[in-house]
Amino acid sequence: QVKLVESGGGSVQAGGSLRLSCAASGYLASTHCMGWFRQAPGKEREGVAASNSDGSTTVTDSVKGRFTISRDNAKNILYLQMNDLNPDDTAMYYCAAAQRTTLFCLSVLKVSGVWGQGTQVTVSS
Image (cartoon, rainbow, N blue to C red; front, side):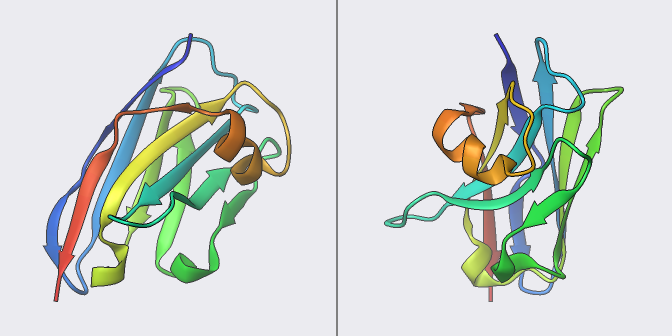
């Protein structure tokens, strides 16, 4: 059973940066899907970024150029570097993983991922 623990959330002012971490335990190969989702109050959970099985990444349009996803396979840690944050980025951020190999991890994780408990990111203007 894969377990995920997120950290790194907090409160920042607009234009600031945060780096989220997700530590995974249990069996997770370097080719298995991992990703980040977020959910703001009153809104649906949305995919933010994913690490695909071929090493490529998928980043949703609203955060392209500002957020970078990376993965340390040796340590089984997934990161999300978030720069130039704005109030619209305020949400609970969740890490997800799935023992699946695909180039479409963001879609797979949404329906069949294992989730962490989340870490809150709050951006003030």
